[in-house]
Image (tube, rainbow, N blue to C red; front, side, top):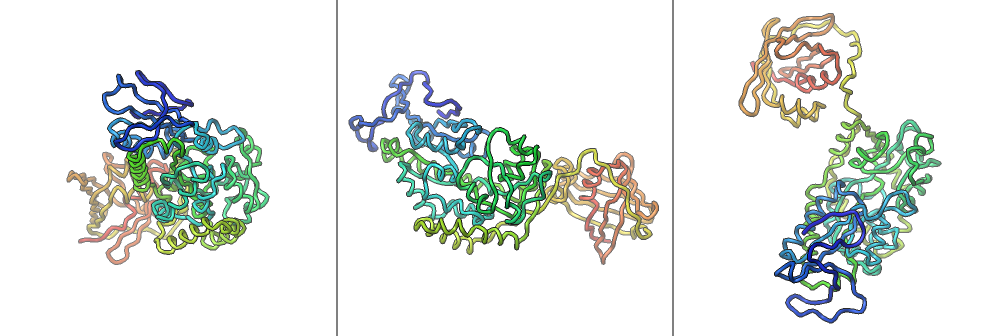
Length: 514
């Protein structure tokens, strides 16, 4: 039985009754009811012929469509499977209420777990800091975990265990952590240039959810933060210069698609799965083992499915956003500016040890590819500007020119996914004087052929295709040895988007094979 819900408290199911969960061991009779019982939903004997069903409520401040849902689904299903249906997880999404409140949603959800209002929670590191949990703070050290390879390596490294064990001081059982994303500065460019250096933050206001660790980073850089329900108005009035977010969240959660600084990572967002210790102690050793195994399975899936920041950047740009780079020198300046934060963090022995372990892991872990700068794809209605004059053009020399294009190649070049899927394969361009053709052999084995002519239009080479194929495209070209390169400059449609698509095919390089 796996359910998701947004209301608070337990939901009664048919033939279920609320009873107390008592401490027991696998195969042993239940012990007497403790003095501080925790309400758990148990199936009545009439509802199940097997053991009583235990439903553990799990608070998650996010909505159902956010990244962790898939991993919580796996966590719940693994517990149901391993227990033969005797245990279930009831995920309470949006468990922190609305954001228009003094506390962050994550902090509210964390407090619900600590108070025993729910038995479990999935809450990011930053919110645990807000409720007094200090053992995890190394995982949010600014500018340190700055690429996907390091982020996933840290979340599965043994260095995490003592940090989770430290949560016991707040009455929590830390089960596992998993990666969500890297958090970058975002700038509303109508209110200022992109935030790319530490000094860019001085005297600036950023809109953030209420969180002490986030505020410490921004305030150390000389900025201030605001939060609340009037963020759109604050941006429109020029008060809020920027914010911080992950690239995936930025694509749908930020007004106006602000500009991301892709190589500056303020901190990583890491999710922490916990149980409240009073409820945990009332589970048998066998039940606890099932939950731990399910938690590990969820973590492993989160690591396996973790999207690269570079891919998220491209998708953000495709959605209309923009990503800029600060450059290595500026990135190094951010770490220097963060020294006061590290002085505080390293005064705690557990945190200092963890930071040393993360630095050692960083030194031995090859970083993932750097996020590239990018901008929005061309509008479907954007037109091609006039072509600047150039040297006189000539026809491409006679011959057969060949290239192999995968769908990934075409998408990487800027083509739409449908166009890329239709045009992947082995291409041949055959030319003899003013006549010629192109041939495409699809991966399926099907072949298309299109006649063409080449002519000179002003100072450009024009390839005019049969009307059943295309219209015409104007090029400039170079031939270096046996490598032909074409640059698309104009198109019969007059649309930039068509020119971008076709340039991914005809741009080359084509290899002259005969």
